Amino acid sequence: MNSSPVFVIVPGASQTPSHYAHIIHLLQARGHGTLTALLPSGGATRLVSAAEDAEFVRSRMILPILDIEKYDVILIMHSYGGLPGSAAARGLGSADRATSGRKTAVLGQIFIASILPHGGNGEDVIALLGGKWPSFIDVHESEQRIKCDQPKIPLYDDVPPLISKGTELSSISQSIQCFTSPCPLTSWHEEAFFGRCAYIRTRNDQAVPYEVQNAMLDSTVTMQNWVIRDIAAGNSPQLALPEKLVEIILAISQQFEVLPLPTTSREGLDLSFSVGKYQLSSLVRAQTRWLTSRVKGLVHHRSGRKLQ
Image 1 (cartoon, rainbow, N blue to C red):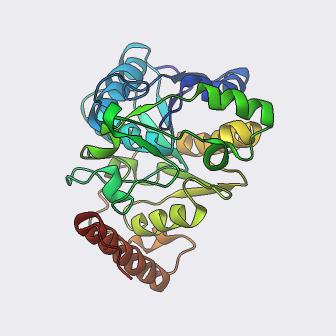
Image 2: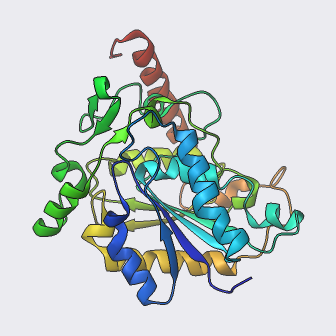
């Protein structure tokens, strides 16, 4: 096994490898290996599910690094990329790989303004979002594709003008099915990744608002001991504040690299320490708010009526 992990970057919807070129340059300039790719659903001329994206990430992006190049991997997942990326990592944590005699593993998962579906329960991304498409996503049903046709405000509002212009021209459509097919089972809640998942909150995000990011984290806090960091950027910190983002990523990476391998089951353990800054009473209230909003969203999705 080689000593330094490779950062595998899973793009967000409608994003291409070019959207991550600058942070890739910054990471490589510091001696770190990187890999990214265009997801099958990106620019697709056929229907592509979230599960197919996940299988691509696993078979073409993660396993070649683990099993052929013999490097550990740290996943960096942006927005939609958190779904196929985390699903692709199932069974690839350090403890799981060690039991099968493998010496390399996915050391950790870093989510940037990402959705956090549990998956495996038949729900799709739209159900997770309350049963309706986000207002900034344009749905071209006859062509079976989606795209943010006017991406400046929701995605690139704080990106320098010339970079924003080039970035907008570099965006591509996404297969509609990656949002409407069942979410594959993800791995951020697996025991092997407990304490090995980080979430970078984008404080000025107009696509995945800061309060929505907090609600997702609040609802999952009993399943994961999150490493949480903030960045004062919109939905694309890799373009707006690339140097700051890389500093955060490297600090998290170092934290993952020094963690011992999991040796005990979490079952039966007192998980109150994992709540971090959230008090248990606050957690219960947050979970109640989240569950209430989810029920309203699902009823809206099924009935077409908005609950007051």
